[in-house]
Length: 287
Figure 1 (cartoon, rainbow, N blue to C red):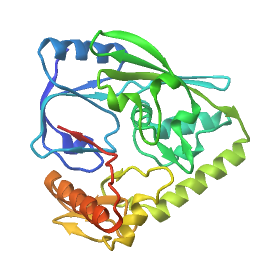
Figure 2: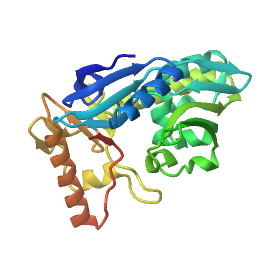
Figure 3: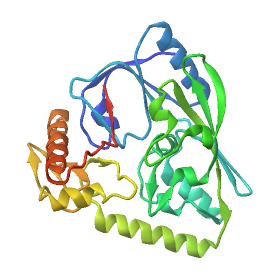
């Protein structure tokens, strides 16, 4: 097993921002992922697990450790249960469950990234959380190197939160989802409606990390607050608060991580000053 060296993280993130990872490895099987982690631990290397590269910001200074890109994608559909490994793209999974006329995953249409990343951040769209359809999650405990199975309750899901954000020793390997039989035509129609809604509302034509802030239950969405604060279109060099959707920061040229972080701080300060609300970032920073 050989780690690549000095690999640009800009090429592996949807924001198209970031410096070099000192070491980089693409894990195409669960077994190779585990071996890579063991090797990194022996060398005392910091480890960052990367999925599809959305919802993350890589620093221009790079990462002085090992970035492991999850790329194990095995999945099995059996009746209404779906076994999916963490590296499987949401797009591929939506396509395959639709072909089996399984309903319950239409909400994820158009979300970039992998099933592992969606579980990590308890992805949500159109009023549905991924935790709503999770039965159990298989994980590797990085500390003990044991493989464990966590029930939905043990995953401690809440609004854009999970145990995996709190306990960095737990690496998501796979999941079992519980879907239900549906009408293939209706499923396709819902998927098309959701994709259309995303195209109309989100700045998909620019690199971004997706929604920057967590929308807290019972509170106004962060995008609404940012819009009300008059911050749409605010720029720091090539980083800009989208005119189309104020919850997105877009890379309009050659934005750096410092530009994005400065813009995030501007938003936080303005929202705190005008509304007394402290926004919490949703994106992970590779540091």
